[in-house]
Length: 136
Image (cartoon, rainbow, N blue to C red; front, side, top):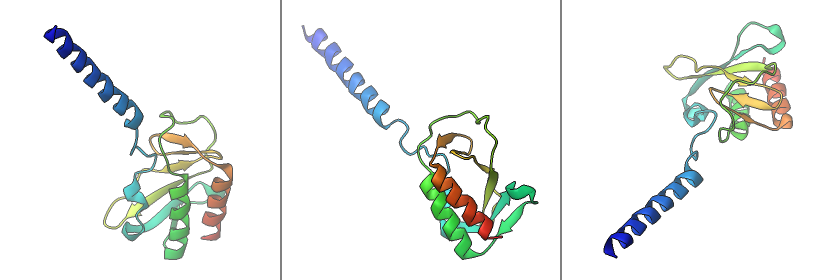
């Protein structure tokens, strides 16, 4: 009888642990690493692929702030891990102070991808494109 109670208690503890893991398992796993979105650490942004221009640096702090605020709104939990087959609008690298550029954050019309991706609002993407184009 005591062995059965112990086994039941162990099974219940394991079940509760699995339940908590399933609910909170992906929490904190965001598409864009949040350290890249810390304004005080950013030296400049580098944009590739808008209007077939060469890579362009954005160094103005007001422009960087507006762009990062939009990226923070586009950032969120991972929804997929494979690069979309859609055509990308542009790529954006964030360069932190005393670091090399990050890998490109690829922006699609309705997705954002940085090693993993998520679906996002087309309106926010359009606003990001306009903000970036106005900073050239």
